[in-house]
Length: 306
Image (tube, rainbow, N blue to C red; front, top):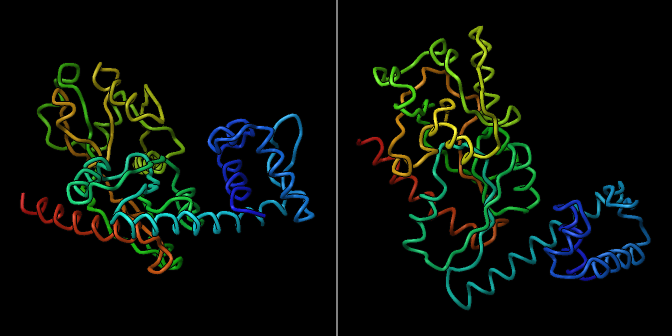
């Protein structure tokens, strides 16, 4: 058994396709398949359900996979540690982020990058449940999303709460001039508008749907997408308006759009920056968490003083 076999196994879980797993592993598909078969022979276990295509992992495969994730994470952490010893704070940080969180990730990375220019980032958008799993299995170094703090405390994650500014309705005044007279809207007013919303499976969308249903109302999405870019294009051309967490968008990117707040009850979950417990987080992740916490704390002070 060697580390590459375990990396191939983790990549197969990630891609759920032999060809794509081979591609991100920088080997041919026959090589990847052969190495995984050799691993099965060495362990004397069937790990993968094979048909014409990848058909998932066997129960034994899932148990081996949980160990593989841990070992690969430690291996990646070791490489980062060695790199940091040679070059100072540098390397690639893996960030898992829930769509439509109450912060602009790009602004955070830019703020930290001004003092730590050696950092690179690999960002993936994941669901709420998947983000907890990825943090626990060390598939990502940092998580940003909406969490139940009691769960994070039970799992002994370190967290920094993010400022909750509420929810805004974003609109193009050329297409919805009647909204310019309002600084805040109520649920009834929003329910009468055509909307561009994230998919119903997203946590922020579920939060919106639950709030409106509890008020005896239904939202009218004319456009649903997992892509924030597509949603904001829909807002720009006047298909509808968008509901977003305040702080999620950078206003200067869309100067033609305006916003007004929605009178809505707070979420039951809370936005936070999360990393593994001290001692289990990689040195790079721990340093980033410290730098990010300082940047966020200063930002929150600036917001309070506005």
